Image (spheres, helix red, strand yellow):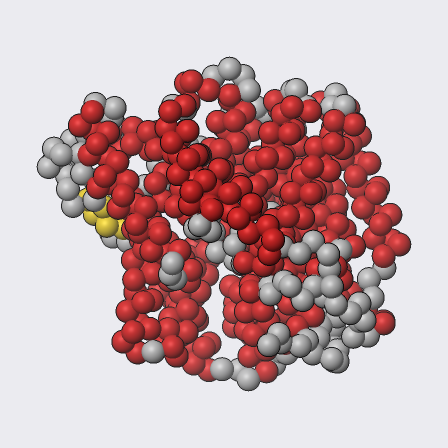
Length: 551
């Protein structure tokens, strides 16, 4: 039976400390999600992390809190963190190609793109949240977490603290002091091309525990298939140097798997969509009655802001790149349709496929906008619109389940996204200068789909991709997608360094063991510890990243 939302709003929760903590938590999680997207190619949902973190720190200043204030902190934080994914997936391609974009102009563009994203799904709010065919698994989970604020579950808070301490200490020892290796290669020198690496990356292990099975098992299985099957075959045939005896063998294996990764993720995602299209009812159902008329969104003003922001984006692109306004609007319209589709997919399944479905919008954009730099900037704009619109809907649904004020959440969205654009652009600059792009430390897996496509547009496809392996990967992806398998995870597990994927798989195995040995309660405590590890690692990543500004 579907859970009914609360029927009374007691407080908006929009307090000064909620705003301050929301931005602070959001900046920490922005660095965390950027790092995950950079290194793993996918990330965990930040809404649950931000809610748990808020429950821990908000009472530090001013004492007792409540579910409505925590909900606002969570809304602000998730909005601030949302900017990490489009920057690490789309804008990074511009830098990888050696292009330059005026930083001030970029920030202004993304600010107005964010406004369009918030407005888009503010207008569609009732269409989504009252649709009884959409279970919204992530917002439902987040609402349950936030409701525990009133109970102040001491065990849950203690587990979160333990995880944060572990995340901070382990990350400092491993990344700061270099005393603990990130992975151990067990097959070095065997001469058979077999590549077996055991990873010990706390962030990936925590993520693997959180996602659990079957996703974590697919991470593990894909990594083992790459290291124990693909690598020996490719070595024996002479396609790559032996990864266990030649230093460049590992990078050669990554390049070898790139076409397979692209084919599986892109073709598989579209097959998944076709396989499940009947489940995605495109007509919103349910009552449009609000809890309190005073909390209604100012729809006329919202529409004006949306139209004005779109006009500003079009004018900037026209004067900066000479982009035809009709071509740009065509790209944004196609992108908006795709945003609508994958927002409903996430509301239906909890699966985030934004990066891979946006690939279709990029193809259309390349056709409509012939200039490659302008096309990349355009897809970054569409990516930001999608990130903000998807986050808006998820937060609105969480708020509805809590009986929170839609207007307070609406205001929080605007407060949260503006500083995230500035901190996000700074974050990109620091991470690129520190780790580079398409390096073992910063592979940016999702971005490589767009990079390869952009390069193909300039006639250099053969230098980047083996067409045969791309076709094979696409065929495998289509079959997997038709069986509703998590193709983004499977594709990424073939492409990423084995140590990272093995870390995620190890986290999943730990969760399975805890559940079998000690039961559901212990498993849930482990979730809180894992969330704390992610937060702790995020704190170190944030401190380290922004400290580089002053060095």
